Each structure stands twice: as C-alpha cells, then as structure tokens.
Image (cartoon, rainbow over all chains, first blue to last red; front, side, top):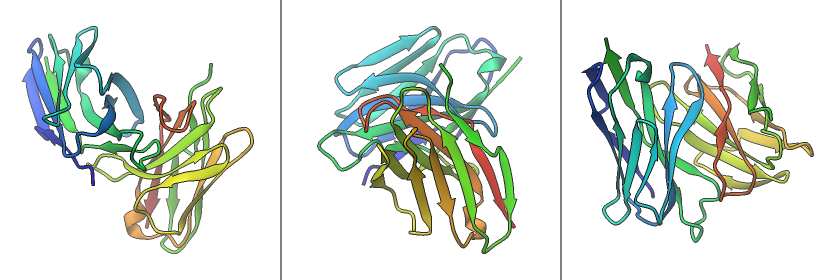
Length: 116
Length: 113
C-alpha cells in the first residue's frame, strides 16, 4: 500500500527566505508525482507535475525534484513571500501496471506561513 | 474553457440523512474522481468514473456511491450520514482514465451534526 509522508508538518519563515518541503513515498513504482497548493477551505491548485522519468521541474520560484529510487521529492521555494502562505500537498500516482486507475495518494501536507 | 465546478459550496446535514454532491467536469474531460479531505488531512480517494462507469474505488463503504452522466458531470451520494463524514469533498476531472493531469474543483464543505 502506497504511503506518502510530508515533513515538516508546519513551517514558519520570514519573508525572503529560501525553503524546502519534503515528501517521501513507500512504493517507488510511481507514474508521476504532483505538488499542489491549497488555501484554507479551498480546492487544490496544481503547482508542478514530475513524470517518473524526470528528475526535476521548475516554474518561476518553484523547483521540484524527484528521486524515485529513494522514494523522495522536494519542493524548493525561492525568495518566499507572504502570498506563498498555504498548505502544500504532494501526491503520487502509481505506475500503469498497478490497479490504481487515476488514484492519487496524498501526503498530509505542510502548512507554510511566511511572515513579513 | 470553464474549470471544474462543484455545488453546493457548503452543506449541513444531520446524522442518518442522505446527501448528494454535484460536480461539473472541465470541458473536454471524460473522467471524474472524488476525494474526501478531513480537517488537517490530505485528500483520500473515494472513486473514479470514466465514461459513466466506475473504474476504481478507494477504501470507502458502499453507502458512498456515485454517478456520471452522458455530459460527464458527476454526483456523489452518501447515505446514512455519520459524524465522521464531515469533510471537504473534492472533485477532479481529467481527459483520460489515468494518464492525464487531474484538475480540482473548489470543493463542497459537508458538516454532519
């Protein structure tokens, strides 16, 4: 059974800091890994998607890396801003050979607070 | 291109009642997945519908059921509501069964008293 863990559970940083969020998963036979942002009480916004054959993806100040063999991904946020405050979730989709259909398995999230 | 929409936004029910939540998928998408997100937790997969057929189910009891219509919109029905069913229910659509990125709606907040 795929399990996804995110560390830390919460993080508070001053504006301008670079930071790293961690995600680990137990089954390395993944199809892809996705990072989402969730504002309080709202739906999920996709930030980055990394296919299993890729090592990293970048979008603006965000960079996500994937080490499939060790079951780890990191989300790097450069020059953090108060508007980055949200919960960040990672989710994995198992490889096509599994019976996962389109199922995403999520971590519990990291609550990020960036204070001015 | 319209995004994924869900209705209602909020809902309050009492234990034992039944509830129906609705989701309109993004234009051109034929696959809808439903997730339950309890407070402080990550979303949990309930089930997925592809071309009006259920093609995947998570660890949820049969009182959680769904439908997908010819226009690919979808309903989630929950019977015999329990207090633990209080959660944010998220719907996600994609253009194929499992290969494509899923796009999430804003969710329906269900409170069971």
